[in-house]
Length: 270
Image: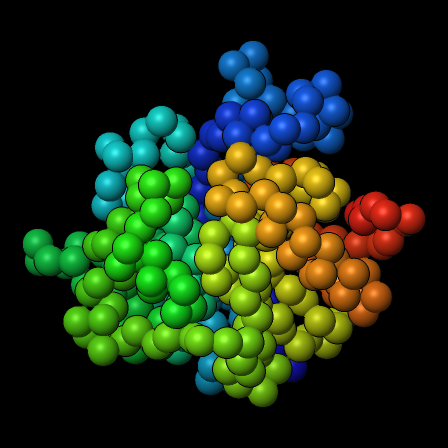
């Protein structure tokens, strides 16, 4: 059984219209606040899962290598992964695995860091897991994602023989499973952990906040809205049926919850 710890890697701001797409502000603002400039506070939430000598990180935040390129999002309160791990009693070298849900900068920036003027893997002893479809997107970025993916986050992992590619839904270890979901991006990984409190799932940007539990509430950042809807329904039906606990990667106000089905809707179970 895995023990789950939450790691907060920092915050940024995203436009409410971008986060909620075609949903009118008068609707989404009742669930998620924004400031006078229509900006919503987002967190970069990661997971540290431990079981015996295996220490697994899911996502790592944006890091600090290219803050000038992403200043539109006003990143702030950034916390180096190293500092977060120390608070949990670990070091960078203790991490055995890093699972990257997808390769957008706010999820994988701390995969690599500067050392003596070179960019190297942040976690020297870790296997880094990404999906084949995400690797394909890195190799041939589409117009909608080309400004969200930086090669320096991933190429050094390949050069240091630490990159591992996932081609299909897979059990990585006993108690750890990854499944592929499209819509937000091709081949995003959703990560499942078996814990003492049941299954804990990190759905990444499939469901970035608890406000996105409604299947039709789709971010404008998603590259295929209709696919996102269908993938969310597929996931949420299972999550509600089996009482999974979801950890929301970007929700600055709700860390996690279970969900329940009510007619065609999915709601936070309180």
